[in-house]
Length: 156
Length: 189
View 1: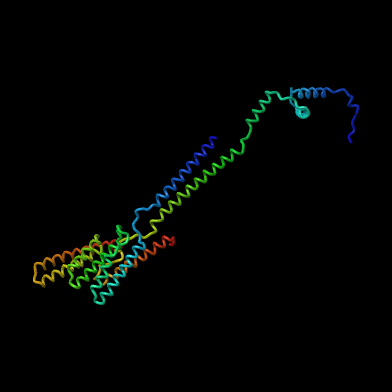
View 2 (view 1 turned 90 degrees about the vertical axis):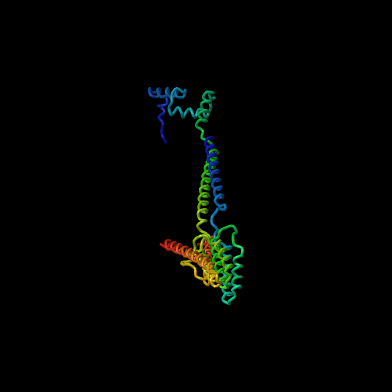
């Protein structure tokens, strides 16, 4: 328990107390700014708020609008557009590359018809060897047909 | 607002590029003028040709020249795969078939029929190949036989003319065969 000295209550104010009192009064009148005055003014306005001057009201509204942050809705729209654009571009690239690959592979895979000249190393003999030549041609192209079937089935 | 407009334009551009890519894909997958491939039709024809030649072998081995010629004639008259499309295998098989038919006709002195077969065969062998060389060789042998027949019949002028023609055809055949052999030798290097 702190003990008070009652003799100090009736004592006349010192020079320092008078000066401090005057500074506080000025601050409460709005003529100066001190931490104590700001606190006391907030307490006073909370108890009995004074009417806001029209000019000050206008200034506060303008300041609030100027510093207001944009709503989240605009951000969401931009993100959606951006994502759609990136997705569309990616799909375009994939489609283009896949189509290029498909077209390039097709012609090289299938065996085309062609002369059978390469199957024979020397001029033909008499008619007795004719069926042997046809055998050779048919068997060679049978292999080509098998290759083409495998190619169409995607087997290599 | 301005940013949203830019985004919309970018999206439109991307969509346009996508459609362009799709359009290009369709264009590339459309039928192209690539060569005919070896397919079931071509193989079926070759298989049929093989069977006809073996049928002719059987008939010939039994001394039935007419039967052998009949089997080969059916091959020569059979429909060919992919009408209107040049298929070298089919032409070469037909050229060789006509050459065999001409040789069979020779065995029974059918010189005129043999000459017709050779001419039909040459329509299927226009380039310098063993097939054309073989047909010209058979044609030379036919003219040689014609000359011998004329000589035996006491027509020396006709015999001389036929024999001269035979030599020309046989030399032409040799020239083609030598050219083909040379091409093959150079190709092997």
